[in-house]
Amino acid sequence: MEHRLAEAPIGVITVQEGTVRAVNETASNILPINSPVGKPIVDVFPQSVERSVPNAFNGNSVADVVFEEYYPAIDQWLSVSIVPNDETTTIYVDDVTEMKNTQQTVQRLRADSERATIIDSLIGDVLEGLVDATSQDAIMETIREQLGTSDQFQFVWTGEYLVESGELVISGVEGERGQLFTAIRESIEEGRATPEQQAVDEQSPTLIQSLSENKSVPETVRAAGFAEGVQSVFALPLAYGSSVYGVVGVYAGTKAAFSDHVQSSFETLGDLAGYAINATQNRKLLYADTVTEVTFGLDQNSPLVRASKDSEAELTLSGTVTPDDSGLKCFVTVSGSNPEDVLETITAMPETQNGRVIRQTDATHGRIQLTVEGTVPLVVAINRGANIQTARFNGNEGRLVVELSPDANVRSLANALGNSGPAPILARQDKTRSPTTKREFQNELNDRLTDRQATVLRTAYLADYFTSPRGSTAEEVATSLGITGSTLLHHLRASQRKLLDAFYDEHDMSNG
Image 1 (cartoon, one colour):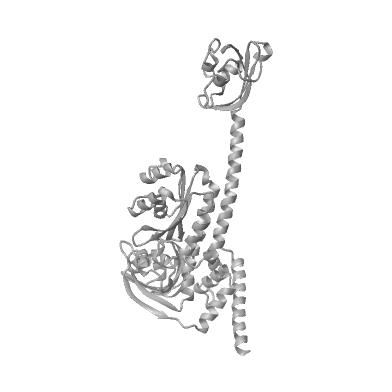
Image 2 (image 1 turned 120 degrees about the horizontal axis):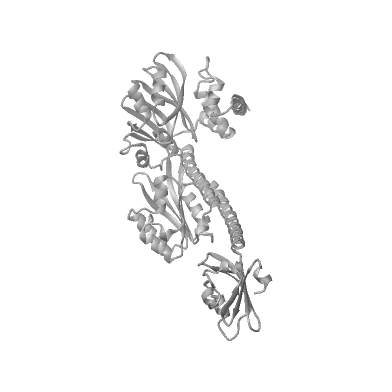
């Protein structure tokens, strides 16, 4: 071999009559066998799926070809150029694996970006539809129609979660369902663990990227998925706080359908859909002319029941502030025991995050503030659309009185409030509400205040910030809300101004 070819930076192989006559060092490092000289080129050169090298030497003359192929035996991409001459043929070989990997990475990232853009647009359409949705069924239908008709997914189905039994009930499906959806439906009816059931049980999204190989999926579902070319599943629970309302199952034909960005977008969709379902329940209650008032009995499942028993005090809920990420702020009136001792008892419980004494009237009376987490019955009731009227805890028992919309599932709420069984229903009656000036005024004020202003104003009011002497300082109220004192005062001034505007607007109209 000529010196310039022997020193070439790419592999050079000289072939005569199908037999290797010479190779340079670079080619020797690429070929999978040692001492290739004197052996047939079709035996020396690594094999590819396309068999381009053997095909080039198969015939009366050698084909003049250039190609790039993947060679699994050496796990490399090679650029091959076969140049025949009168007596010999020269094969030029270059390792282009790194370049190919870079190209594939760029193509994958570009595809992921395009898919993410499409998904974001779809989710934007879903969220726009949620604004006008008036019920849980309408919200689930919006999700199915927008996602299930997209060419990004095979099909999408939604299911309602039944708290009393822990079961899923399919509410609808959109897309190319085939035998796979039939297998899913049968698995759900038979109580087998589908990805959607797992997502509901764990209250967390579940991703399956290889449906046919994942042993946690029922065998019939895996087999049907393989037959229909469905490779990945994303199961998304629809929840708000501690309440799970349902689930969405999204099935796709590729493993790459659910990138980190797409998963994040879906999780946002699940949070907002759960919030929207909760809001529709609250909206029904707010505008209903008739409401159902239900009294539930609470047991040791409630930390306030346990605190009442341990501290020998009667505890009465004075009010709450809407739950947020830190929990539900509760303001509780204490009778019969030292408020500081009661607070110490209840804040030692795992369901309670923090608390403080707002006012101590005497040695056995006062008011305390505490924050409880999402599994506490009070939070569960609010998250499921109930309006708490009163809550009293005395010794071994507690009584929770709530208002529900007429079509609310009382038995479902009882199951959610109970521990080993449903909470007992002590009383139930339908009540007709007549519009009052007070209610109209409150609705007018709620329309004027932002959510943050309403939260700050209500927290300050329940914390006795406006009493004389004050039960809480501005710094204490601000700390409980996780904001600065100056921010608190800004919100209070803005909300008080709107309160006065609402009052004087109402006053002026009545005199006009």
